[in-house]
Image 1 (cartoon, rainbow, N blue to C red):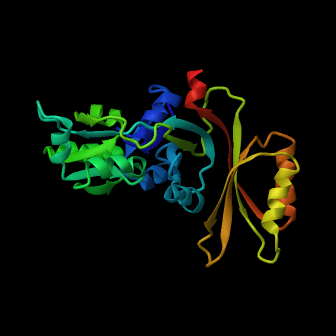
Image 2: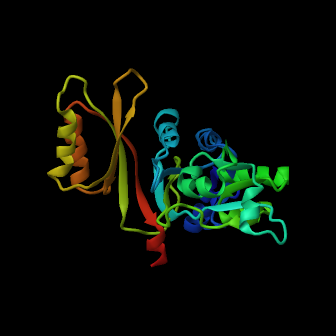
Image 3: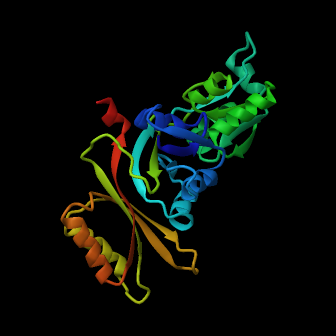
Amino acid sequence: MKRIALLGPGTFTEESAHYFLGRDSFEYVGCKMIDDVFMSTASGKTDLSVIPIENTFEGSVLLHVDWLVNEVELPIQAEWVYPISVCLLGKRIPGEDDAAAFGRIKKVYSHHVTPAQCRGFLKNQLPHADLELVGSNGEAARLVQEISTPDVAAIGPLAAGAVYGLDVLAGNIQDHRNNYTRFVLIGNEKPKLKETDRYKTTILVTLPEDFPGALHQVLSAFAWRRINLSKIESRPTKKKLGSYYFYIDIEGSLESVLLPAALEEIRALGCQVRILGCYPTYSYEQEQG
């Protein structure tokens, strides 16, 4: 049975993986920190890793993108988009109302990505509480269970409350209902997944320094072939100031006729092209039918 590393237990990553990959098809290995997730697969301890890569309202998780680009050589094997429902978790005192429950909380634990999704709730209901960031939302819930006092709480998924025996002090506290996170499955193993006709290809393009207008030429190679780019983002190469690569998500497969030709045209311009993966893509709405 293939082993998959992810933040967990009790995280949105784990919840999404169970939904799209199944609970019993793989052995899931929970990790406290995202670097442990990456290194678990890079070192061969696990076959694959699940990485949260982008959120509807905060955009790319840049730390995770940089790990994928600069620290490991693990191709993307699949992606899925999953709805995120954030809860405030803690110990409820029998008979108290929400105002009393929120008023006694002095510290809230969370993964660094999640607070941005519920800023309004934290500002309006818990302005007096300190926010402490930890490696995952599952770790946040574990700490609240371990501390076991009514003045601490965690924000995270409903599943974290179930794993660590915490009460839901408030549900759906995200600022927007249309809150989704994109996850990628990375590793050198190609797992058996559901059939789909939806594919993406992710590439990194580094432009030649002595070619003015090179980015325009790169985009033109896709445009005249009517190849859709769902994302283009610049990130520093970390080699010298002012040097960037472009992280590009392309709607299409390398098995098509047009995309490989576009990549060859870009290389002919003197650009460096690195393929991060050609992979199936799934969505929650698609699975719901």
